[in-house]
Length: 95
Image: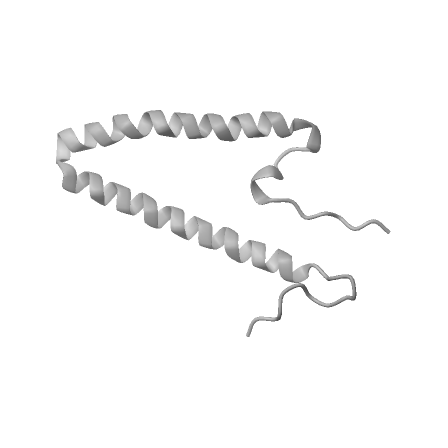
């Protein structure tokens, strides 16, 4: 019986043959974000001042932290479900 390999989260959307396309989509999203960040930051600073820019960036950072925490919790549950070669868990149980 062959065990199913666990994959990294960001490379599990498509099958193995489409990894290049998936990587290009992720990279393209990064490039678009880099382009838009300058435009959005500049227009927010012009219209509301730097105080507004720092509030926006703080909100984005808090949102990203919460999303990363969610992914971390999901990943820990998946790791706890994996059994080692002798049948023990890879991580000790959490209380």
